[in-house]
Image (tube, rainbow over all chains, first blue to last red; front, top):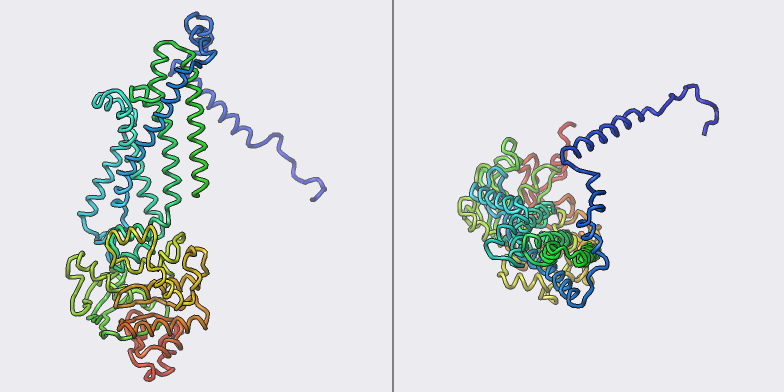
Length: 282
Length: 248
């Protein structure tokens, strides 16, 4: 390095400083105005501890409920939550996977040897209809589906399974189709060009290219489904959430605490599971 | 399979077709080498011959039937009788060699047979024999992406040999092979085609090999036939003129 002093004089302060100060002020101002809009009350949080009723509820969290009967119930409901997520996702896969195959343009038989504009309007129209119905399925959140379904099929896990199935089939259909479209087309076209059927070309030319990605994404979605099926319980769709809602309404703080702990364990288990599975396949 | 082209133009762009007013007759069991500079339309011609690209004008007949005038289902059935082997072998990276070769017969397998082959391919001994022809004996269960470029190209040729098509359209089958293997692959390919009375059209950059092995050589330049003759009738000047750079 050159040890001689530079002829140029360094500026008095860092030129980036002004921008940072301005950005920070804007952020503080925005959060302040937004907290006004949301009527967020810092003082209310302190009041909660001085008021007897909320304080009693919070204090009743400890020790967590640990009777054998309740623990058994909590474990059963946790397991039921996993079951809701898994069944829901399975049904979603049964719907989403075939839809994604149909949506994949590469697999179109009538389009071989022709330009995109020349492909038949019937097949383009059918893909359009399918694509928009997928959008419809996933644009309504699973919580809303669950609310509706609880009124249709009654309280309990069935509503949860169906709600997950409906929303996730939309998601899986869309993302699977995107994964299918992203692969190298040459192996697929080659099989189609030698007279292979659409399904054969899919199985022998497309799937081997993206099976890892598919599995990895599905496992990640399973993790999401586990988390969201807990929430679904609050509207009466069964599982851990429904139990938590009941305990909350009875102000049984110790039970809420146990259920929360189960929730934490469940989510970290799903997290770990999905990470491990994806590491195995990726 | 017999193929006849009449005044055919084709290409990916409507405005500038690559093949221009091509007329050609190919007899059953004939073996034809296509040579010519890059961009002459060799690959496009192979795709047209294989029903993979629709003509923009003119027509093409396979055994006197114009499949582009028929329904797309009928046309697709006809595709089971042709096999295009692209220059870069179209094999999914994670697939195993045995499955990749097996896929050469998909058009002749029903749903259950394909499903079975997808889970665990059968005909192991037969596929092994085909691989042995191309010097790939120990690669049966190897993954395609763990092969060298030359090996991959030979797997592509093994898939071609395994297929039941009677029109073989092979695009630069020797591009990734060393001289010894190239000669060997050439011998196997032409011998198999002769034994099974398969019509073989293949494009090459190795002019000497093409002239040595093929009884009919077509020189293609700017999408038109430059010469179409038996190798003994092709003079050195014809070859030079075929590859001559237009600018000078």
